Length: 375
Image 1 (cartoon, rainbow, N blue to C red):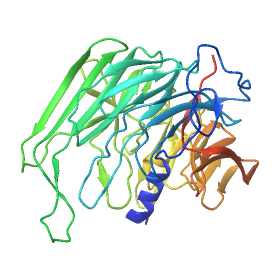
Image 2: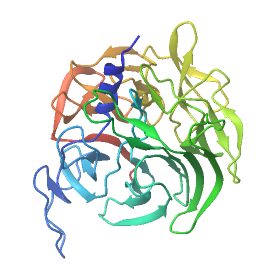
Image 3: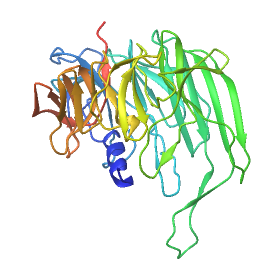
């Protein structure tokens, strides 16, 4: 059984820090924009998105970049960081600020504004979602063609500091509210569903947090716990219709998860007598059952084709499971053989499953978001 400290360590491994430079330059001081293109080397291999922080280690991300395996950033932009929501004596489980799409990388700032950064360096607003200025938790998904967005926004009670001289954690005071909002890219935002819980009452509604978008439409984690003191299995996954109503359960009745690939493939945590993981399609049919840990659903990252998976400490494919180098946390895949993650010092690196103990340093600090599709 994992402890809260170990779970927080994995979550911290998914949080951005440090980073490469502005487009296009190697990791280091930002480069001021110029009218003419810089003489940067051409991309070597795939491009991928990363999150970074200009502040000390462990602070929220405030920069997103599209980089290559040579360590050069092709595009980079800063944004208003979000404030991590607080729950007394628990670790909050939050979705990444950024996710890749067909046109580039989408990223959400601390004000609920979602933008798209393209490999060319162009960045534009695609949607704005309403939320409280301080205590909030935003999860969102973007349609494969980039034309629609769905967001779940949980506004939480205010944090109340302890009385002077008392060594106790802060508490929370106030009402809870939740909004499920839909937006067309570059267009207006509409509230599909709204719930409130007055102060001092137990919530009877279940947050609907979008976790992906398949050809059948958006899918969301419904009623999953938002924080934990130990393990976190995600929550039940359902399809969501145009009115914001949850319909068909995805992945099977015994599946909890926190992410779904555009193909509908997902890593299901099966919380029975022994916690196990199964890779399934949307209907619940098992594709394969990797030997990885299911104690943190957010740490389970599938390769784009669904043929490989990591839990952060292990990587598995059809050929078997390998333990990753000490201090290295796997964060995502370039393909089913190439895993990107963070070393203990915060530097990004990658490993190939053919030689999983060999780390290839990328030369800058950051957190991997995902492969940017070639066009």
